[in-house]
Image (cartoon, rainbow, N blue to C red; front, side, top):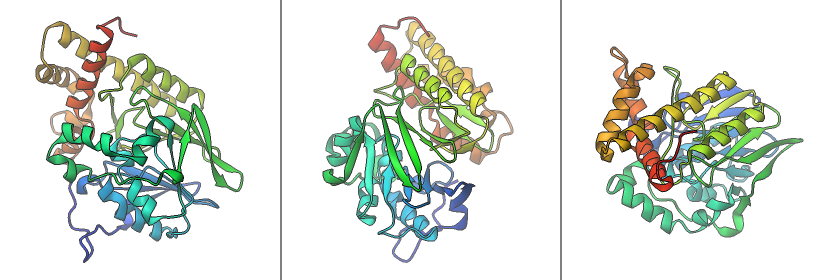
Length: 330
């Protein structure tokens, strides 16, 4: 799964044709190759009159993104907008570096994340407390984005893609309080970030993404209802790729969240600590996922565990249960 072979003489990643996938409507998926792994983090270029990049990936992903955009005919002066669904480092960790590479681009983020892009010190300190020595290998360091180049979104907002095309943002917390979903007026694509979970295209598995400290069950389910009301034609997952079965996928996303919440609540009420709660929930949900069944491709199993880590999701649910005093499930 990890790919360390595609490097240039300067030790920075070089783009491969398989890293770029055309999705129609002048939309291109870019494998941003977090920590050298393929098929885990995706960015998307909407190419047109005002080219727009959705998601930067991590800081070490910035050269991958730059080379992919160059291969698609978008040079340093051409990129008009960079928009991130939220400021977690696998989605926006490259924002500062990409801003430096594309000096004409406006950087768009929800208002609750804007100050962290301008001054990432608190965000990086929090990430360092969680990931320790693995932080640099996984995510690198988020460089500051010049404050004057940041545009902060409110409950809704619009990004001009040129030619009458636009990207409309819709506040969708639950996964994170600075999360937005983005819908393309021309293609009908909805960029779901992490609000609908993580998707494994090889098996069709979908697992919730419920990390601390912001996960909230009711808000997460409300965000999914909002996504349904937008009537998108396709879902574009940051982890990972396009999904055409919109309604079925959003319904399954809500179901997966409820299953994990119920399992974590049961573990908490049984007095289990976090490690034992993770083990119990992982075991009880194992049969739901083709990637974890006997005979599954080991590389896909590894990828599934890496991108949809049970420990982070259970920890986020446990944090929420402690915050609300383990009230009733929705």
